[in-house]
Image (cartoon, rainbow, N blue to C red; front, side, top):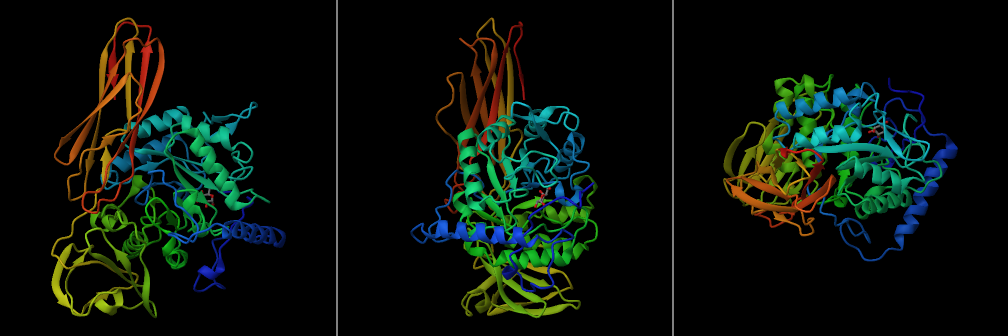
Length: 553
Ligand code: GLA
């Protein structure tokens, strides 16, 4: 079970919270004074280091966001920690979750990244190389990745920037950065969360920057998720280093959803809105919607707040045991459309009245605005949202779409009034037009094409990847990036909102062995003209000594 005595450097930047004195992140030991001073010292060093960087530009002065084409919209997926902790993470559990992700409709709604968190996945062998824990993951970590890719999902893995992971059950990357990132690339990870345990004396920014360089050297496009729980104030520098960074301590202890703590995490995270944007996101942690202990209203409110904050939507509940209400909440396309908006602007609290908050500051790609009214009080609240509260002209006549009832009202001049039940929300989209288009939500049938042929005769084999958008508009054709090996060609064809990427392999001249290519394709969101996350998938080709050729996908 979760090891309570494990050593961990959990740091909550108190100034981020509205109620600093009463806030705690479940029962982790507070840091000893010496370690606190080290954390403060390394934060100061990091700040001084970055202070000399020049030119003010979004998201923070002097920080040039990574331009790796990844995570242009907040990553969506599932991670085990909130529900399961370290146990019983193993291949069987992850595969069951993957199957549930597909059968429940979450995949169709855009959830893609999935994999074990700190689930004792690997060891370091005597030669220093990471090796899969075959007792827990009998197919090996590469085999688990193949399973996930064949389902049209992306593979998420976990490690640590220090000497050991938080439970100390797995090796950290310290002094093994380059070889470890190669191992994650060989396992075909698409997303890597890197924790900050057992990193005494390490500089946060320098450690994560070295890991970025190692990831890039490994050559696979991998969404890079920094997890220092706010230590080192990553919102000030990490846009140049990774794609998302945790802003606070853990949202809950494994299996113990904590509504009060979640709302404190949200209050802290929303203040950092200026740091977020396409490719670089504030991460207030995995979601707790659907976990035991939350009411339906709280599940809906939590999800709405995460959508407004353009937060990564990593579900943290047991997907095998979802109620219809949880599925309906987690797959609400209109709410997801707010989160996945291609402008990538993080909303924030613009007005607070006691326990009632109005969240806005989230313009969307079609010129509409997202607005959230959250009532954390014990009584129903009648709330007037004036257009002037959300930066709009009082005289404007605007349509109001309720993203939970899926009804549109208006046009209204001046503002609108809503009644919000305790712990519930009104999630609204406000527009001059009576039209509420959805941005693209990309879903693929597979991210792995496996082909096999006998070596004796030259053959042509094909494997198809079908990609579709669940947004309102059709997309332009994906453009395959040049640089494919000579044995592979890819043709892109459109059929309605789905496109096929037909991979044709010619085995002429190839000798027995394994061949691999990474196919990358680009597209832009048609209405805003903003780029979307690059699409990529693996093509494996095996030339055997046998007679027959066949295609597997
Ligand atoms: C830290 C992270 C969590 C989880 C655990 C695993 O606490 O913040 O999200 O990854 O480590 O041990």
